[in-house]
Image (cartoon, rainbow, N blue to C red; front, side):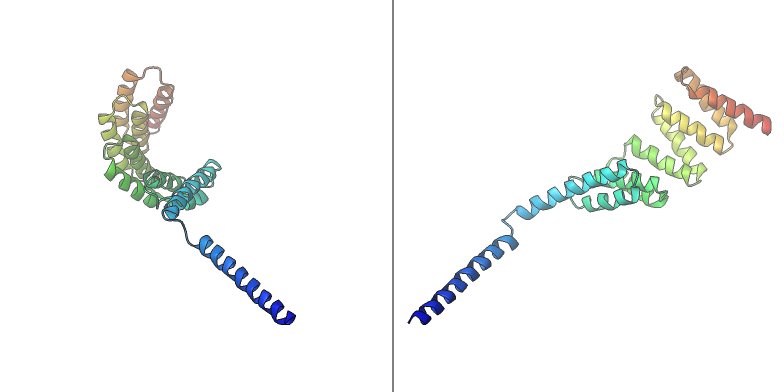
Amino acid sequence: MMKSLKKSIKINFFLAASSVFLFSSCVSFSLIPGEREVIEKNLASEYFQIAKGYKDLKNYSKAKEYYEKALGDSRFHDAALYEIAVCDVNLKNWEQARKSFEELLVKDENNQNLKMSLAYIDAKRGDLETASKEYMELVEKYPQDADCIKNCITVLISKKDYELAEKYLSSMKEKFPKDESLAKFEKKLEELKESK
């Protein structure tokens, strides 16, 4: 009798322990309704922060990897895509950067920063003809932006279009007479004219 009671206790204990295990495993593997979305949103936020840390360390390939992981969350999509494009610029992945900036420009077609970025990419990849047109359009649209004019002059000098570069330099002197880069541009143009 004692033997069968001990056996019965062992079996009951085993069944109780098994049911506790089964219940706890069900709870741990099935999420509460809505919990998955919260976890995914928190995860996207964490990915974005990790990417920012890598970007601050100038590890652009690792930063890009984590920004790509944050793309899935609509709250971070555009910001992550912009940062991916910036990483691609720093990695000299010109075509990939251009594609990302163009995608963002479709959503925000008057964004000056995106247009400047595209002109910069064209200049860096050696398409000075396209870059100069883009910068001249930007100067026309944003005449009070000194950076637009400076970039335009730089590209025109690189393109060896000294006459047009002088025209923009003259405009810059009128609008920004105290800008420190004026002397640098004047000197560069003088040197280039003398070497012609």
